[in-house]
Image 1 (spheres, rainbow, N blue to C red):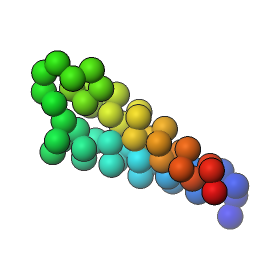
Image 2: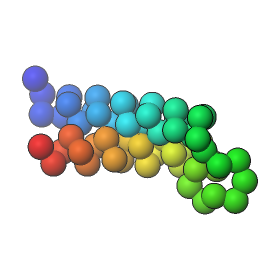
Image 3: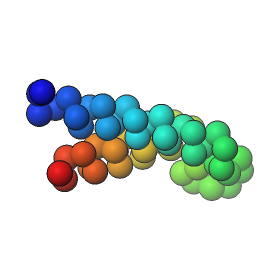
Image 4: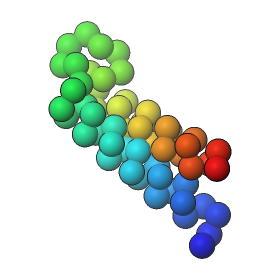
Length: 55
């Protein structure tokens, strides 16, 4: 496997998890991160990348 395949898949999974978090538990008003679906997807993807890259 390529050394970039696992982090890439983790980023996709993290982005999906971020959107699921926004959809079910996200704040619809004044919360700076969870009120915007794009930000939760970006933060989820970044978290997935960092978790995969640290291993």
